[in-house]
Image (cartoon, rainbow, N blue to C red; front, top):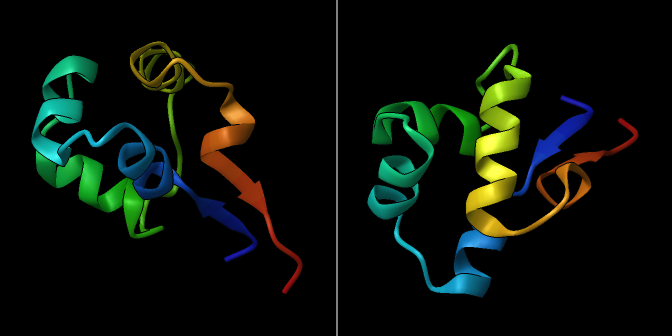
Length: 68
């Protein structure tokens, strides 16, 4: 998939667990796993906003386009 989700990188930088991140964003840990593993087909802007607010980052820090 040409869009790579970099949530794991941002969580590692902040030493934040998936469970803590999920709770702060308002997602289940299973849904965070779906995002992290690149299995998500879409992300709501409100979810992306909550992730950026929680991690104090920009959307481009979480999503990267990679040429196939």
